[in-house]
Amino acid sequence: MAAKDRDRFSTATRLRLLGEQTAARVYRSQTRRQARRSRLTGRAALLALVLCSLIVALAYPTRQYVSQRAEIAELEQERQQARERVEQLRDLKARWQDDAYAEQRIRERLHYVKPGETGYIVIDPNAATKSRTTQGAAARPWYANVWDAVDNADRADQ
Image 1 (tube, rainbow, N blue to C red):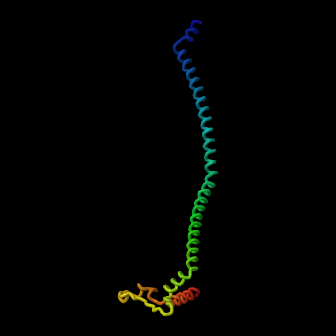
Image 2: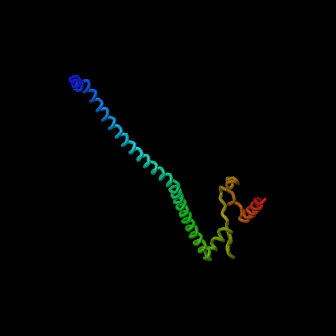
């Protein structure tokens, strides 16, 4: 027994037992950590998967919403411009209903004069130096412009 007791209390035996116990504790600790890590990793992966699924599922409707809001804003701006144009046309119509305005515009555009009046057309003294292309339609009588417009419209149909 003395050899057995001596063997049991020898330094080598004690170190070996201590090493085995330490290794067992380290192994248990590592398995716990791995189990904890794998649980957290699985949860994190599931959370990431759910978040990615939500992002993918909401990306198209969000894009549609943003594009529709931009289209609505554009249409509202067009509607506002149309309203302004309608107001301008109403004002113009109201002005043309006034006989004095209509007479003034007719006299300016068509060079009409009332009986007993003398009509004058003032010619620019520098007109001779200007080329015919720079004068354009302003130098021609109104009926020539109208006739050219009719001819051009007729050519466009061919």
